[in-house]
Length: 341
Image (cartoon, rainbow, N blue to C red; front, side, top):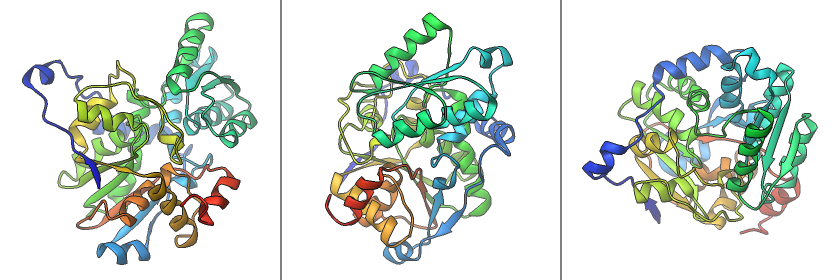
């Protein structure tokens, strides 16, 4: 079992740490702002996982969002928080796929122009889905950091407005709206398993859950290949990681060495981080398809995978954030058939 727990900071590091910049009132404001523009997703019980754990286990199906992933919450909140003048300048972002799709979707809904910068590691199905929403797509380099360089250039040269994929208070607050629904639907919530990448989802959910249900345990789940936030938490500071190909492609990319929002929140509010092998992630995808009857991409299946692998043993009512469904169809068929075991 590979588990990384946040370490205690030295007094010097604590003094220089980035202060938390998102609070419960920001999440509630985001919920009011995006109401009617995103789906209030269902929370469903998994009988099979409940039997496995001996505890009630529920799936929060963000796969039901119109573009197939939770990212619409943060992207929509960030875009709606802009002034009209800012929106008219056009939007730009770097993405591993789902955030870019969310920004493109929000832009189309609001009649705005959007440019999405991605690396060559982003699966073709996600690239084409973004193009189909009318956004300009730019493929740059082999990492999200490479794509971010292109974003910075477009902001400087064309005056576009950046909608960051995770390290932004409005994006974090938007993702945190999930937790308000969780607490309403499951007041006795004891544990939340959250896919962990740049930390926007985990930070947003943790802010509200810890405020409304302080005893609840927050567990971040990532892959063994290039888990940037896990490495940062272990080191006590943002660090560079090599981005690698993984079934959980949406969890790829760095957190930024100058991270100003999500690192501090994840460091302070996540109780533990669990890393998964590719075989374990594949098992999660298969279980979702064959037992839960849900098409789930690798990043969305990591909570299921962690339970199946015995790397998390929850105590009390537990929620798995099923973050997205945008997996290549051919790859999904191979995985479900056992080819990627």
